[in-house]
Length: 50
Image (cartoon, rainbow, N blue to C red; front, side, top):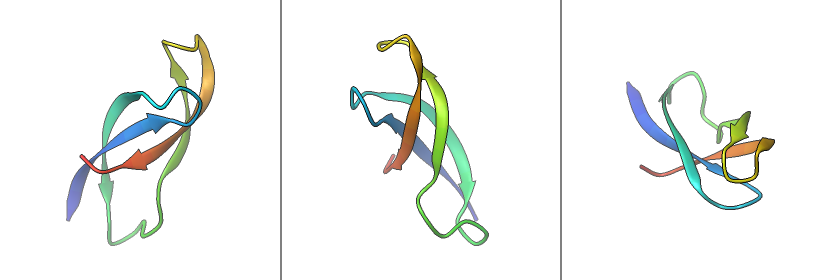
């Protein structure tokens, strides 16, 4: 049930993080505030396809 997803920065559009998500419990797109090393600040990262 758990799928690997990539998290993409909404500001610079780089794919920085990979994580797992249970698609049965979380049906929508995942949005997490993470640190972007290219922008050097905390930004929102949205789910993209792996």
